[in-house]
Amino acid sequence: MSIYPLITPSLHPDNIKHLQGYDEETASYVHIAAQALSEAYEGINDIHKAREASKRNPVWNEAAQLIQTDDFANKKLLKITKSIDSANANLSKSIAHIEKELTTPLKAGANDPVANEIRSHVKNMNNSKRRKFIEEAQQKKDLQTLQALLGAPSYLSGLTDIEVQHYTRQLHEIQNPALAKRLKVMKNAATLLGERGGLVFKEVEKAVGKPSHVIQKLRKAKNEAEQAFILKDQRVDL
Image (cartoon, rainbow, N blue to C red; front, side, top):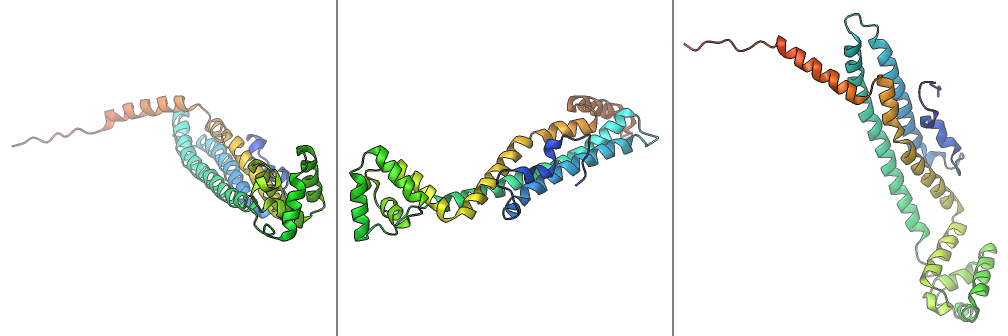
């Protein structure tokens, strides 16, 4: 995509490509965010072009040029904000779905006789040793041990509910690295849209050429002046 010097580079859609976790495998999951930024970037450039085109109209003074450009900008802004809102909504929905998958409680292995021995063994450890034991099991991807500990009530292993939730999440990420990677880049994309979306209004105002309160004054003056050209009802009742 082209680079337009009059528009902040913060809104360029290529910013999505620089997100942590972005690559060929995850690109399609944040494409909607890139599209939203593209809509904003190109839309604002269209407003700049409209402003320049208005100056070539021989019957428009500066006030008329600004009002016409502002009318066009408002239509573009509506389209841009709808695109960003839609992207945010879709990302939020997808993120929530993945979060649910990665936090689903475990059940497998909880009733295995060996699992009972594992839980008893871990319960007798102090907190430091227990934490180290679980972390080593994660590093070795020892699913039998992890499922035994995390697939049963926390107190059977001497863990807290929060610890079980924490380690369960980590286990799901170990088992589904692609899903965890996808979640990360989608969260980063949502954060970027949230941070950059507010820049759109400032850039649109800059493209129009004057602040909104100035445009409103011009519109008011225009409407008041046009009142003089409205024909009054001159009918006479007989």
